[in-house]
Image 1: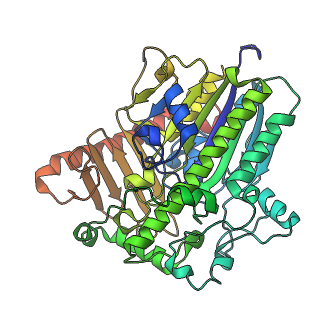
Image 2: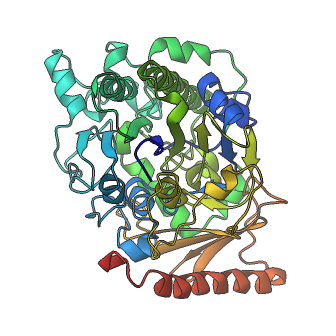
Image 3: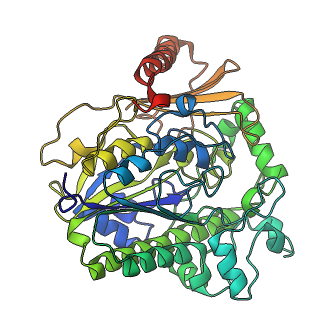
Length: 477
């Protein structure tokens, strides 16, 4: 394909954004006019699931088109293998990352021509590799001190806030604003007229939940949904989940001091801060659209918006991610283009985050490797949908120092059922049609023994078929 016909592609990935955070997707507690525009003019995917509910394995899967058990990245801080970005670069694209990728090492090129790295908002712990990213340097150059768990611990109310704090430095130093502005600077100054792939990794709404005051004010009097916390159901949770909760209580990961029994006021404040962070992100998306229009390329640009995983926000008594509950593994996803053939379409089929890999390659006119387990979403963008559909989605996590109650966790999600299997021989089973809030765990219901065994067999078949499908990935064929 000639470069004149190759579309520019802007791939915006937030960090830890739940599926229920875009107003146009049916969640009126949110204020997201720019994301609403993307939904109204583009295609949305209402059943997008991650292939792993934490940063690095999810992103490594996304940028290889392979499941974690194939590419070998099961947890954060594990070295990434090759990515498909180099294939775009070889086909004539200028490939640029601004913001978070969560690669290991942090500044690995991964096929990009340029990487302007910004990582987690809070890395102030000896548990994480020391690294000074571009945002750290900008804050230092302004003579400021970056807020982190070290500074928040100095507050008398630190243990009471569930990671929810107000950003007190200049707004343009906030991580999400800084990354968006840097990406916009690239759009405004890069002189070449050839096609580009710009990946924008916004660090929020990952904690600390830290919106500037003006964004928090937006949610001051809004009617926002409270967490799903059924005490009887929580008492019946697997020991794996109970241990995860205790891990969160014991360690203030990402400046979130989790509590066993937070008050309604505390949980409401946490959610207000989180949703305000999303509205801040929405403004950055609007600024990126303005920059594309200013550059004169909006009509020939595909914009994709999604996240690497969600956030429990106290649903089921849990903090952040690392579980297979909906808040953790179900994410928003949209594809926008000026010439969208199906504006406003909402796809209800099961899809997976790593499906964006072959989608981007196909949209760029670049060959999709046969070894990819992911399926292209391009058929959903046509006026009339065609091609293969995904009947079920899978997710997995293993060897994590935070999810330390299980050696390996696997999820299968069908239109009706969600089964989570812990390799120790226990699990969870939910009828998502009858129980969308995942309160009634049916794992021990003997009347569903056939359903349970059938879903476990599907996991086995998925692993076996994947072994054949991915046979040549190490050799790039």
